[in-house]
Length: 591
Image 1 (cartoon, one colour):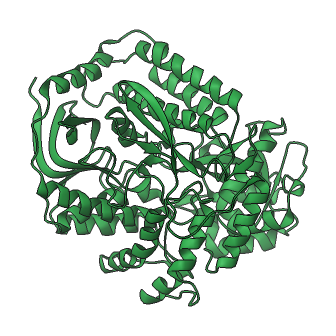
Image 2 (tube, one colour):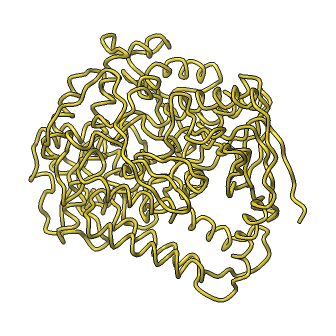
Image 3 (cartoon, one colour):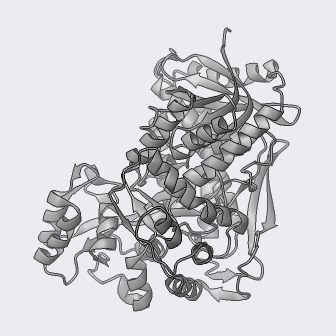
């Protein structure tokens, strides 16, 4: 079989903010760079869909020429993020995030990013504005690009990564990428869930292929769910519009009996959470508990209402931010009509951000030489709960991964690709095209998404995780081998791509479930009904997952602490979270 070969110093997977900033970083070190995107360049993945905000401390904001809280410093911002992360952050990486933020913000302004407004710790701008700025800079520096190309697996030789096997989705042709270093910036695995706020293009590809290559993963049990995401009506399913309304205008949650969900909890915690991004972890958790108690609405969610606020006052506040009820280019006037009539809108948690990923050091090197990770593919900046901006994370981590990959690539030669292993990889992928009779991929994918939502949502327990793992084993052993494709032509074969995506998502969710089962405590966005305490005596550790001789291996590793020491003891989850909220509110500049 003839395979197109592309040789480069650094191969970058992913065309969001992390991928483009990594490509820029590698070029800044003098390396030749090839960036590949599974979708359309600069318009696929999570980055273009972001809100979006670039966060940094108040002094950094002032240095960039914006308003910033003058009492807010690097130290305060660092403390804030570590408290939000429930002390599971790798504090070395958190420190770099805080230190690098102002420089990354200034360069984005230099490259043409246009702010829409600012607050004491953030510059707000549409997601496309961020991606367009790094895209233009990458083109100016001579980064080579390809879109509609998926990376399928990594090449290894002599214990290091030496490139990747790619697939041109339009033509169905395989591509051999030979590279001295590879940076993975392919984002999270949103498509594994039935309700998501991000792009359904994200299927955990980078993390899955790195795991198959033997790389270590960390924090895979931690998944942020945005609360108050629209469940119904279906044409708005997954929208965060009601989440945003809860933050900027206010609102209430009611169960199927018409009772307030918030009434059961500490009023200070509810009030503080609803004014800040703490609502993602806390409100998602209490919403799920209510839904699991049998008091959900027809479509599985809760009722979002405006409470006691007169509708005219509520609408006036909404239109101050979103004239004519337009949000992210779409009209939500029907949502306004439902709120006006007192019907409310059915909402619930939706998967938004994945704290877990490849275990990296300060150079964003993984456990395999030649392999680097950035953005949502890299773990540990935010620990057990992300509140600071992922959009700033993608720029700071992307830059460091790119610099490191560029330096490594220029200092090392490229061993030859193992053609025998490449032949096996290709045969594994092509074997899927032979199956003409069997189960349709879309039906299995939908069932898988529902199981993930039910068993691996904001609230978990031993029994349900075990049931989920049994379900995944059946998928791998019986259903996936029986999946069929409608046509055998590999050119833009939708069924084929769906099966390849499903294999990656099942791999990643199996890892996530095993990590969640192993962590016998509640912390951050991981709440165990059967272990409702934060255990700082035994669980200030990361769950590390890797593949060894074809088998999954789980280890534990103490978190990296450089200055902020966690409290000791075992504390009820709600009490611990309130303590973290109070520490956060006392820090200052709490965007």
